[in-house]
Length: 232
Image (cartoon, rainbow, N blue to C red; front, side, top):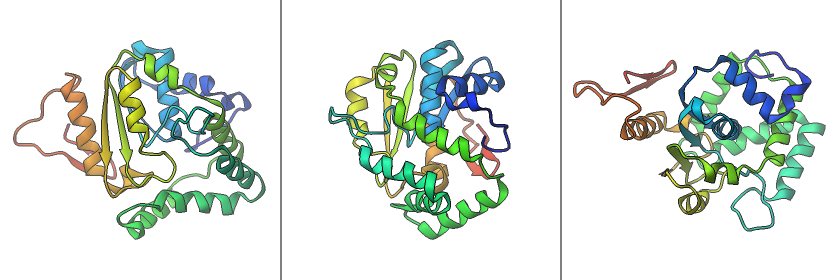
């Protein structure tokens, strides 16, 4: 239901989403997921660890909505109000989400322009897909799955993120066996759009540190463009 892909009612389940992604993914890969995509990538790593060489969670959390145990997450009442807004006033609620993306950004104007360009170039998501995504964030608590992983995990958090509390770093440092935590200053919930160079360099350094990528050529520099990262 996103990016021009078709929507099926059964896709509302997180495990089904993972199956559809795995159908087009390489047999082994370095997995990076942003926000809801991080939850999906984590589920893949938990259910199909042989397919995942390393996992990077970018502004993502294993448990998006707060429970009753003090875990740093969005308050349940705040999430419920957002879900209600998506059902009743979707345009206004999506505008509110874009505003949350810009909260904490060092250059909110540049990020606004970048988001507008991405919106203009993309097909609109299916409304049911948006609702299903929120349901996945609400219903899934993958903390135990993350703690049980036996593969390299990287957590990239933004200090000014309005949706994923940076305090998540402390929990991960205690609960996850092989985790590298990177805190990005002066960034909000979309650090890959605000600080693409810093995000790319952090990811490449982590993967190379685990021997998953060859060392960089001394004469090459990482350059981030709209088309991706080059050279590796």
